[in-house]
Amino acid sequence: MNHAGASDRGLPDAESPGGGKLVDNIMHFGRALRAAGLPVGPGKVIDAIKAVEVGGITNRRDFYWTLHAVLVNRRDQRELFDQAFHVFWRNPRILERMLQVILPEFRADVPDEKEREEISRRVAEALQPPRSHREDEGREPDEENIEFDASMTWSDREILRAMDFEKMSAEEVARAKMAIRGMRLPIMEVPTRRFRAAEHGRRVDLRRTLRATLRTGGDEIPLQMKQRRTRHPPLVALCDISGSMSRYSRMLLHFMHAVTSDRDRVHTFLFGTRLTNVTRYLRARDVDDALAKVGANVDDWSGGTRIGHSLHEFNRLWGRRVLTQGAVVLLITDGLDRETGAGLAEEMERLHKSCRRLIWLNPLLRFEGFAPKSLGVRAILPHVDDFRTVHSLDSLEHLADAIGRPALRRREGMDGWIEALRRVEDEQRQAQGVGR
Image (cartoon, rainbow, N blue to C red):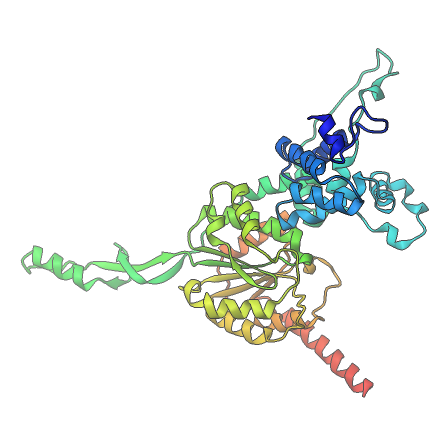
C-alpha cells in the first residue's frame, strides 16, 4: 500500500508519529470476524483498508459504517459484526462485559444488573488472545506433561447434542452444522390412489386378469392381484426468521437443506413481516452456497413478525400448490406476533384442515415454566397436531423420529396443552371480571 497516498486521504501513515497501527488493526479485526464465523478473507480485508483510505476517519460512526459496508453482506451478520466492532475498537462498557465472559470470576464485582448481560460467546472466543508458549516455561525438565485429546468423544458429543443453539460458540456451531448435515429423515410411506401389481395383493387386477385369460385361451382364469402404491408425503416448513428466532432459524435452515438433499417434495418458506419461498435455493448441493442465496433473497431477516399475515399469504398463494397428497407441515415459530394474533386463528384453522399433520416447533418450550399466555400462542395451539421444542441437536433428532412415524390419531398427545390453554383462559376471564 502507498503510505503517502494513505496520509493524504486520511489514513494514518505507518511512518508518522502515532500511526502505523490502523492497517494492522483492520487486518486483525478481519481475522477476529473470520474466527467468529463471518466469511472475511484477505480480499475483504484489503477492500476494507482501501475503503477507509478513501473515506477517511472523521468520527467513529463513519468508521463503523465504512467497515460494515465492506465486511457485512448478509443481514444475519449484523449483530455479530456490531458486537465484535465495539469490543475490538474499545467501547469501555461492552469491553467490560466481554471480560466478564472471558474471566467469569470478576462478574460478582459488577454492581449494575444490566452489566451482567451475556455477550456472544462467538465474539468472546474470537477476540480472546491465543495461549502463549511461554506459559510452559519454568516447568521442570523431567516433569511429564500428559495431554488427553478428548475432542468429539462420547461425553463431548452428548454435551453438544443437549446444548442450546443460542449458547453455542462458533466452534460448537460448526460442529453442530456438521452433525445436522448427516441427519436423515425416516421415510414415512402413505398409500396413494394408484395401484401396482403384487403377487399377494388384496384386490383383483381385472385388466391383467383378462389379459392372462386370453393368453391361456380361456381354459383357466389366473387371478392377477394388485395393491396400492405408497409414497412419502410432501414436507412443508414455515420458518420464522424474526429477531427472537434468528439463531434457531439459521440452524433449522441447515436441517432443511439436509432434508431437501435427502428426499424430494420438500418445500421451505421463511417469514418475518412477509413470506418468501426459498425452496429452490436450498436445492443447491453446497450448503454454504444455498444459505448465501437465501440470505441474498430474504429482506426481512431478524425483523418483526407478522404470523397471521404470512400464513394468509401462504394459504392464498401456495396452499393448493404444495399441500397435496397429505402434506406434513412444520410451523417453526415462537408464537410472538407483533400484530397480537390478528387473523391468526382463522389462518391456522385453514392450514390445519389442508394438511395431513401440522407440527408446531417452538424453542420457548424448552423452559419449564412455559405457559400459553401470549395471544399468538393461544391462537396457534388449538390447531396443531403436535407441539415440540426445537433448540438442540437432540430435539432435531426427536423431530426426525416424529416425522418418520405416523401418528395413531390427529392431535395425539395434545390433551395436556389444551387443558393448560383452558386454565390460562379461565384465569384471564377471572382477572377481567375482578377488574370490572
